[in-house]
Length: 330
Image (tube, rainbow, N blue to C red; front, top):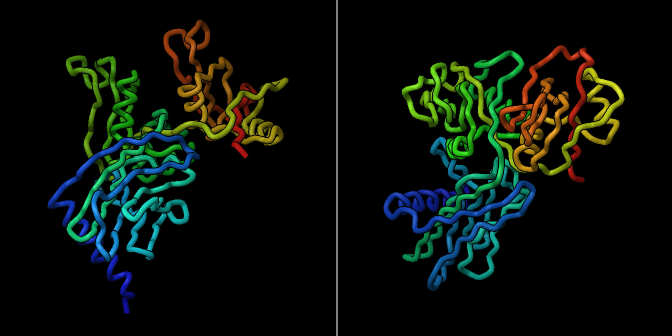
């Protein structure tokens, strides 16, 4: 037998969807936070409450047009879902307050949230867009470009302390000068790439600058690169000074002996873009690639542009490079 509370939640969800379709969103708000923060997303019902109390539902709107349940509340009965379990609660400063508190923000938490309240004939819907400063970076695996299906792309970004970027994030990066000629997955299943300098190999010279769009692709069978998004660092990124150059295994051990871990690609991009980190020494990263971050272009480093320079995926036994380490906050 299905519990009465579960049936009520089902009816509540259906009622809310009908209200959304009929009435639309009443207001939209933008909030800003960094990873690791606690954030409050405001939502409040105006007017008097009836005796039966408020029915409240928070959902997260995904870029592929689906919704993820966050929390549902009916009086004393509350239920949280999925990745939000034990990380969210309602502030409830007064009887009409439906403000959501999210603790220990993760890079996957950013996006649009919808608050829906029903109290008799007094209803309200609010959307809150939760944003964070971060950086978009293109990624190709060791096998070379165009070797990732969508599911591989998701896993690859997670391995680099990042998530697959959204269209909005890639568009913002293009507006800030990102120019990249390899097509990559976005989190809505489309494949796009940003061009600020039109040229023949990248869509042609007759097409204006912008995002080149291949549209939605088959998530399992199609293979491209990926655009990842990473937020601010929650630790210290640094180049480890050593008396000699290191092999990959020696680089991993050197960071560990220094009380740290070998840095990921997301770490080097976050340090470069958000902190202005500048170092003209090529160093190993966790994926086996060798890179170095340049914020001040100069001869013999990156003479024409600020960038994270990519050396490649060399033989891990070569003792030709240093290492970048990352020490998480305790």
